[in-house]
Amino acid sequence: MPYALLIPFPCAYLVLKNNKVLRALMRIFMTGGTGLIGTKLLTRFPENHRVTVLTRNLAEAEMAMGRRAHWISSLKGLENLNGFDAVINLAGEPIADKRWTAAQKQEICESRWNITQRLVDLIQASEQPPKVFLSGSAIGYYGRQGEDFITEYHERCHNEFSHSLCAKWEDIAMRASSDKTRVCTLRTGIVLSRKGGALQKMIPPFKLGLGGPIGDGQQYMSWIHINDMVSAISFLLDNPETQGPYNLTAPNPVTNNEFSQTLAKTLHRPCIFRVPAAAMKLMLGELSDLLLYGQRVLPKRLEDAGFHFQFQQLPDALHNLLRE
Image (cartoon, rainbow, N blue to C red; front, side):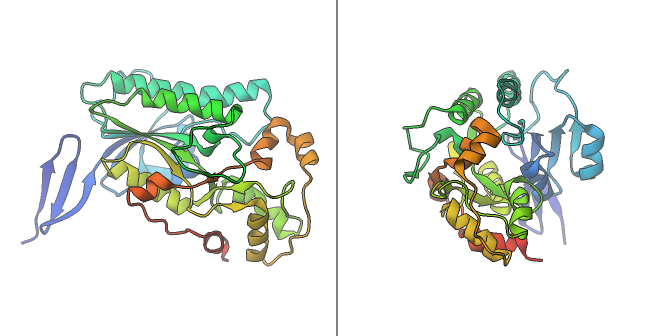
């Protein structure tokens, strides 16, 4: 006879039906749930998960995502995170949307550091804290690195804005680590998605046949398909042996030249133009560093932990995203 049984675990439940484990019920607190990664992640959670999302615009979030989560607009009145199994912290001002004025750089930093510190404080104030804290970061942690292969064990980071931003961001997050809470920091590469992010901005000029490499085109682009991105987050969420920094990038980074040629070919357009480095610096100032320099990043710890990428090669990823 069919039956269902809830077996209590320390902070979750295993749902059994017909003697088969369906999926552990998790209670998740999340920030950045309306961003590129967060919205996709919410669609991937099993229906039995209970997700609470902090957002600045309740009406917009509820209209866009409906009942996929319980939405709150403030942490005021929240004294701890008892009752939550996991915290996923993806909040932060977009890093490449505006020129890096002093005020904008401060906003980029504080939008990440402040919310992360607040979450750490709530975790530390909990008698039964969440089992896992996944907190955002970026491969900008390493700074510009040329052609060298970079794994999580790389120690010679280039001292520039992206490094100082991510280093402090991760340092704050790691303060939540204890014998009750494991912490993973998500060093994210260029997330490829048709619905937002860098690729969406690149498509229009390339469709017009006006796209091409930036500068000399030799800078490496460490990318990841949005599906692999959310799968990796779920993998880290579910695997209790994982902790510390993880590079969330596909195993095969490419140069900007190769990326441009592959994108143009996928769109059946020529790739004959080149954007001079001087023009980028004039238009974007210091922000142009993100486009003119790069890192050749490998997801060593993620693969060593047993994660398998669906999209390992750029042509396959772009074909999947851009097919009509």
